[in-house]
Length: 52
Picture 1 (cartoon, rainbow, N blue to C red):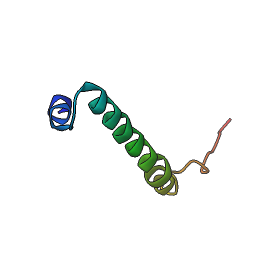
Picture 2: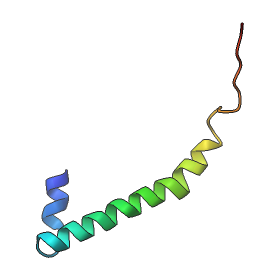
Picture 3: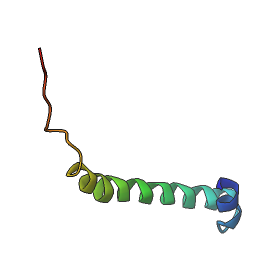
């Protein structure tokens, strides 16, 4: 999958590297600000019980 993406990015190696870094940053930002806050509401982090 990654060679397929790399082959389709425009430009030479430095441009491909810059676009790759931007794409990775965009995916991380989408996960951090969109997916994780949404999923946190569905996970039972506050329902902790400790039995002795």
